[in-house]
Length: 215
Image 1 (cartoon, rainbow, N blue to C red):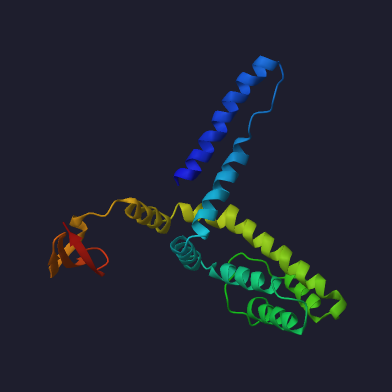
Image 2 (image 1 turned 90 degrees about the horizontal axis):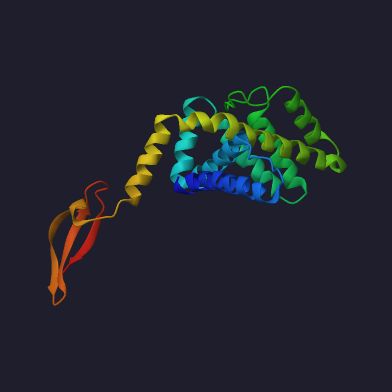
């Protein structure tokens, strides 16, 4: 969070320097667009959450609570598909993705995700001749880009306002707090030497057991 705040503050600091510079050289420069800065800040924050196991888990849990968890499953499936080499196996995976998410019997919720005409395009691309295989990849690639944009601009801002995001922030704050003796329950002495005693302890919040040396 501090990185994002610092990034935003630096942008406005650079703008102040720019104003002084343009007065000095007599050249007028365009000020930074606040919407662009806000979008950049939002993208940085999403990357921090999405690349962190706990953050991604809570984000997906939020998506599941509003019926959009299928977006994550579909995005991961398409990412795997795009990494495969050309061949029958890739075509088979593409058909599985279509049947799982876009067929009439698909049961995985995509929220307001794309179906309809896009489903027809994917079906035609999958069923086409091998020479048109790239058409299917282009359709899946475009779909994934649209989904990532929807996640960034629509789903993520709502997640930031949720209790799950507040929980993520509190977890991060706890991780930053230094660990002290007060965070442990001392159970018994395991050993004693010239440099102090070694205790069997358990952490109060996680109940995990540790050995702790006390001088």
